[in-house]
Image (cartoon, rainbow, N blue to C red):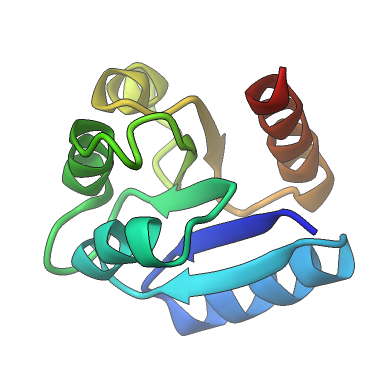
Amino acid sequence: MPKILLVEDNEMNYDMLSRRLTRKGFEVVIATDGEQGVEMSLSAAPDLILMDMSLPKIDGWEATRRIRATPATAKMRIIALTAHAMAGEKDKAMQAGCDDFDTKPIDIERLVGKISALLARAVT
């Protein structure tokens, strides 16, 4: 069962998304701010990280940069999650080190497709 680290500060969002991902066959661990997300990228050893970009303490952009700068976590797959669907947001996420990008509200089928594609790519 692939393990996903969900870094999300909104309780309603992480509750709903973690339940839906669990039903899809993923193990989900949750961090509620950017600092905790960076720490858990090491301690929880997830297969993939779903990173909200608007987080307390440090934002998702900085948390992603820190994860990429740490040798033990540098190659982890990261999908940016944001409610900001403005032009340039995807480019900003990719420049920070994310592998993919998805917008809120989450379309669970689309997100699971992106997760599956990244996990398959990580194995090969």
